[in-house]
Amino acid sequence: MKMRYLLLTVAFATLFGSANLLAQKKAKDLEKDKQSALNSLNAKADQFGTVAHRIWELAEVGYQEVESSKILQNELQAAGFTIQSGVAGIPTAFVASYGSGEPVIGILGEFDALPGVSQAAVPFRQERPEVNAGHACGHHLFGTASAAAAITVKEWLQKTGQSGTIRFYGTPAEEGGAGKVYMVRAGLFDDVSTVIHWHPSSLNGVSAGSSLANKSAKFRFYGQASHAAGAPERGRSALDGVEAMDFMVNMMREHVPEDARIHYVITRGGEAPNVVPAFAEVYYYVRHPEMQVVKDLFERVVQAAEGAAQGTGTRMDYEVIHGIYNLLPNDFLARLMHRNLEQVGGVIYNQEELQFAETIFPTLNQPNAKISAAAQIEPYVEKPDRNGGSTDVGDISWMVPTVGMGAATWVPGTSAHSWQAVAAGGTSIGQKGMMVAAKAMTLTAMDLFANPALCTEARAELERRRGPGFRYEALLGDREPPLDYRK
Image (cartoon, rainbow, N blue to C red; front, side, top):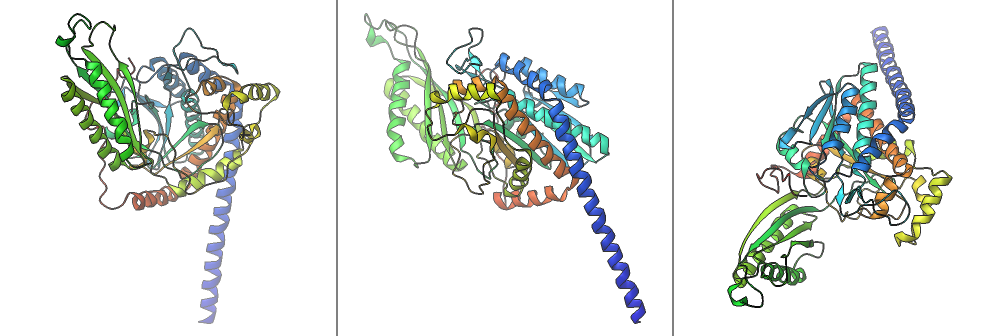
């Protein structure tokens, strides 16, 4: 009996020892593969830099990114991906896929520019006369880095025979068009295990941070035109309706939660001072960290518009342009991505890039920022202060475990949506930061493919965070994509 027990003990020890050795070998092989992937990305840095700069030069705004979308599709198709274009009723949206089975890892790519921020790739204010827009949020880098990561992961899957599906999502019109929401609503993420994304920034870092939910609409007032001097009593000013609405909403600001944000621009105010405007339009954003608060505040804004129309004798209607959820963080995935980002490291400037940074730095009005921060990785923060911005990645993050990071594509201290962001994004500074992101996303995706249990753990956190009984309902309702919202 003792001999039998001894033999069983030896057998179990041998079995567990073999399993441990096998696990160690698998881990070593993965690390070798990761280094090979980093080397591949280094070798293709110039190629992807050229792709990003072509999109930077185009500077196509939301839902009009025809050429930008085509450039990325061509790159992915040439690399062996199957392309499904024009998805979710959006001509510039697409999905590129390679592989089969689970896990299904999605990588997001954006490519829309912002209107009104034309800028050359120089460290002083200089508009480009051929375009009236610019990549002030760095989405030319965003889409390209994500494509680079997807292609590199595909090559690894093909080489190793690793099972699973890598999927690149070409997502248009993030800036106010909510392209991803329509893709979520169309069920394009229903079978995805995990989603990876990034965003251009002035620093390198990963956090489990959130964002602001956001709902926007264009409020349109219709009045009666008349001669403003000869027969003003016959007129009803649509512009009066807009201004009355704006006045009431501005009074409302005293009576909303302090972390709410409401902002607007008058997009149409009339054509001539001596003509009572028959039509006027104002474009509103309503934001808050919680979706339900956004819904409530938006209804109060609508009521203000209705009151303004009644008080000015005009008629009002409105069109919801977009509505997006706040980001739902995933701490488990964020810590995994942070470890990979630390392995990759930050952005090292050469002498020319340092000179660019030193020249543009005084225009940033951020004396406490340090140019050297571009080379560093920010410490991981589990519960950072809320981000003041909004992103349509938020809707995805409530449906699929999602992780993102920032990379220093701009000089430290640079604000997004600025001419300085456009300028740096058009230089090698932007391209170096882009490759930092591509590398960190690649390594993170490889971890998830090599160990699908990580996806299961991330899914469990998602379920805990969104709570029981969650049912997705788009804030923008059932409207069709606003393909002309930038026209």
